[in-house]
Image 1 (cartoon, rainbow, N blue to C red):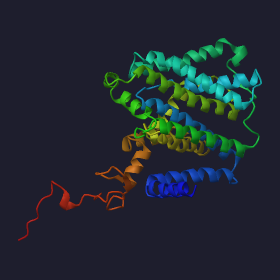
Image 2: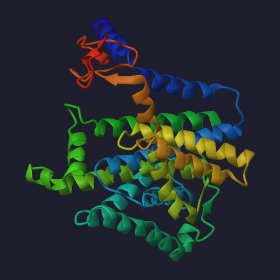
Image 3: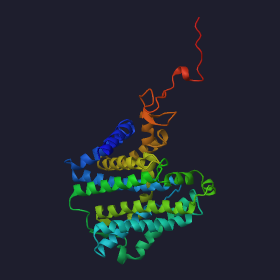
Image 4: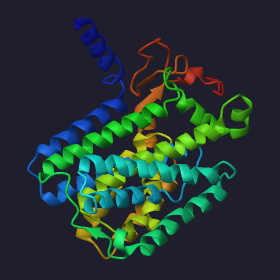
Length: 363
């Protein structure tokens, strides 16, 4: 036991504390856990709860985008799962512990159904097809008002818990666990789980991936199913947090929000959409309270500025400022280090090492 603890301690010192970006991520996690126990207003705590749910929702979109599939109807997974959880809870009286996982399975089913046209479509054509899925589900909602509540939706749903603090920590832990699973599933350097490198191959060149022996059909369907599952968990949590589900969860904006959060935080990273969702959702709620008349104008200006000056996302832009990768062993180091912490290679190129330097001539 002591051996494993020492090994864990060395790994923590060498892989977390030695990398500035990971230290900041650890500090962010500590802050999220600490603020839940602080004496903050219920409104702020509700905002953080919804931010955790939307962070999971955005990360599930990035998981699908990591495999090269552009989904503009991602709100269908979220809305279908929210409605499934609400119907099972209000009509059948099932507990929240069952309705959320069953709602996530509804997201998986929708994901597999949407994956069928993706086998023959790519790029903008696939995006147009996925855009129609939430519209179709909205029609289904209006077609069966006795079950779905029609335009009014379903309300007075049971809450996850009467304690707001418990709901906050429950949603936070579920989000962190799901994000960790998605990050591992997209890790291209993992030796145990190979889905990351396969998804990356599908994104870069699907034809080459197929000729190399990869079953592209299986992994496309897997990407949609996994994305639908995690988006479904977010939808179920949203239904029992808000205690109401309506057709608005299937609107076009609910499919665009995860795209905005992902682009802002950094696509193909899984953790980037989490940061983007926390920052942008919290910012939008604060602007709604301070300047509700012009909040959309300010919000849009922030997004446009970010795209112009940080096109790869705020997380990658920030990491490029504080980290540097060793040119020899590819290890991530702090930007202020002169030599690599593993192979001791020179990290910063001096003036004398530049090939295009000009010789100074003195008279």
